Picture 1 (cartoon, rainbow, N blue to C red):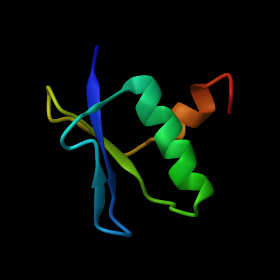
Picture 2 (tube, one colour):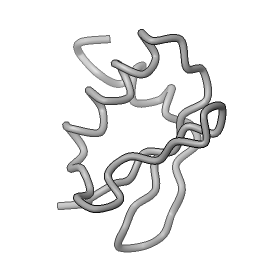
Picture 3 (cartoon, rainbow, N blue to C red):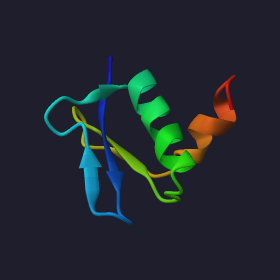
Length: 65
């Protein structure tokens, strides 16, 4: 299962560096950050290094969106 870190450029904050989040944990953390007003949030896959900047697709594709 993929593991992710979360990056919030507006605050210089990164989450999950010590303990990367699985996809579900990352999804809910992004929702929490969006509710707090952060507009730009990205994920980074810790295994591949791939950065996901289109986290909006997570919201569009989720049944809870």
